[in-house]
Length: 303
Image 1 (cartoon, helix red, strand yellow):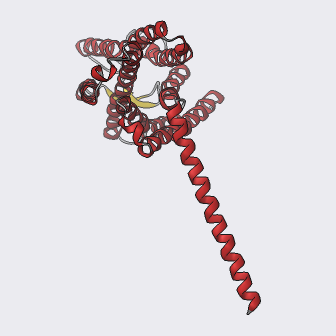
Image 2: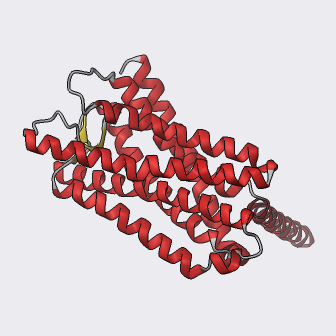
């Protein structure tokens, strides 16, 4: 491995650690606090956390193995399954972000009618659409053998359009790729920008969070760039840039918990209460052990 590959590997390890810890913390807060579970946006947050955790424990380690070994991790069937899962999870998480932004837009712009416009039933219907949308694209890609090990990204994902496709097959792949990115990544980006700009007109204090979320979505667009270039066989693509773009896309899983959950007051209070309770319990256990030790010492002295 050269220096660049070592640095990218370390970056990927850092993303895995931060993503795992932060998303688990969001899940713990969700299970610990019943008030969070009662909120409608919690359904979108839970779905987003689910997607991020699965990506963290499945696709990220496989990409790391592919980068270190410079070879496909596992057999063809295993890699195709991982590619299907990555396509599904990436799509689902992006649509979950769009759903969260629409929920906040309704909450800020229509505060008096929010509870009638966004109910748990409505949120369930939106989540149902995100799953159908995500499964549709992932199933089409897997059914036409367009997922597998991609040498350029060192990961199991959508395959390169240049890899042995017939003219008809290549045309289908081009249509699929453009549709996939337009109806998922680009659509979510537009929804994020439009909804948060409308929120900005109502509440100026949202400006900082808008910048964070918009920048996060721009980072995801970095992953689109080399994939779109694959549609033009004469355009060279640098492998280091491709792997870095994959790491940047993965970094979304590490950023989401902070952008949508952990920086909010309710979540901060919840995990602070959890930490304080654990510290208190640890202190009580330690005091109990000290009393037992002192009692044992006194008994031994008397004997």
